[in-house]
Image (tube, rainbow, N blue to C red):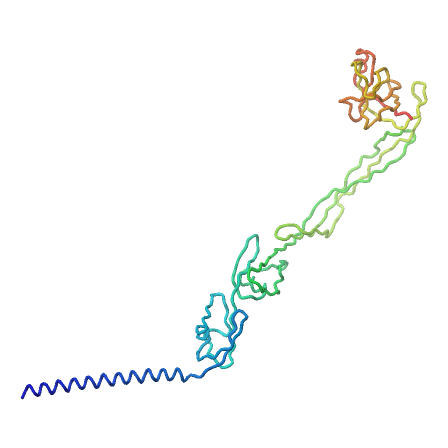
Length: 335
């Protein structure tokens, strides 16, 4: 009798467990069915999606903009922009726009920076890069222009204007006065000239440290220049050694002497008393000369040391050249 009662109780317990399991399964089934029915019962909504300038119309049951992009496989970079924001609820007729960031090069302060940003104006790119413009700085392209191509370059030109004070010399005037008592070709300084001084204020413009423009703002004379006064001879005729000489030029020179070397002169003649070596740049070869202290002569020879206002007069003996030595003489180039 006790065994029968125990078996009955065990069977009753098993039936209770089976009933609880079936109730649990039924409840779970109803939960899934309800959720699925809720999902499928959401209304379809028509939205427009624009990515990289390409637009298409969609029918979606997504609740947010983020879900729409996920459904369409649109991945976003950190710099990309979405309008409206990702958590915006999706409504019928919603327009979703995705703007991709592009690389932009910025040349500034002697260096180069590269940033990624959604195409906009040059000014927006500079702001994003933390580049601040001074009041005179220039930008190429202009900061109001649009950036449309990836890899565009923006150049920032730093402009600075400075005031610079400079002192410059002022040239003096040369005044020439004729003197009929002075031989032609000779001059005498009556008054030594002196340069003046002026102070100039410049407005100097620099671009990236290099000067590009210099403007005179003001200038003033600090010291007036003093003109130089020179007396110029006009006398063409003098008497020397009992002769009246007409000449086209008179000049002071340093005169040395030489004698026979066995060589002919530069003009092919045999040296003789009256032969004179000259610098052809000062006294043309072939010129008739009168040399004070020597007499008449002719420019027929040259010498390696005869340069400028120097001449070399010929004597027949070495002793005569020694007596002559080196002296300062006046030479008349005769007409």
